[in-house]
Amino acid sequence: MNGLLSQRFKEGIQQINYGINSKSGTKKLEKVHELIGRLKQKYPSIHKHYDIAVTYNGQGFATNVTCKQKPKNPNAEAGIYFLRTSLNENEKHTLWTIYNAIREIEYTFRV
Image (cartoon, rainbow, N blue to C red; front, side, top):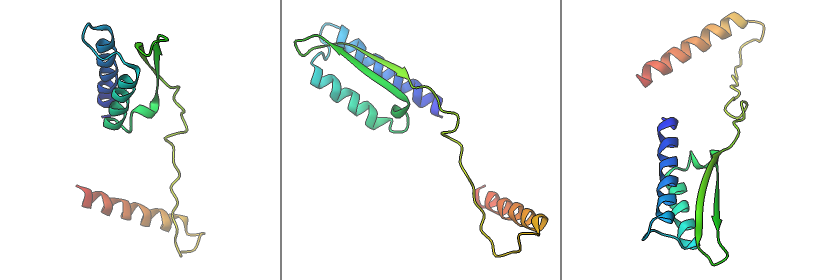
């Protein structure tokens, strides 16, 4: 799903860039930043993975918008799962069996 959202986000940046380079497109710097803000609002979980740079001339008009993917941190999506119980710590096999039973029940409810 993130692949499709990422693709649509990049297409949105390309459309903004196309508007800058077309004859009657949006070229004012404030308006270009507005369009980028709307695109970020539309894709809140995707835009934080990209660096967006707007180049402009000194007269307040945008000339180009570039979008570059940030380097991926392999530990960013890793999480920690804690189990808290009042059972004895020495009974690891019993804890594992109970955990698997709870996980199976949760999966059944999801389906």
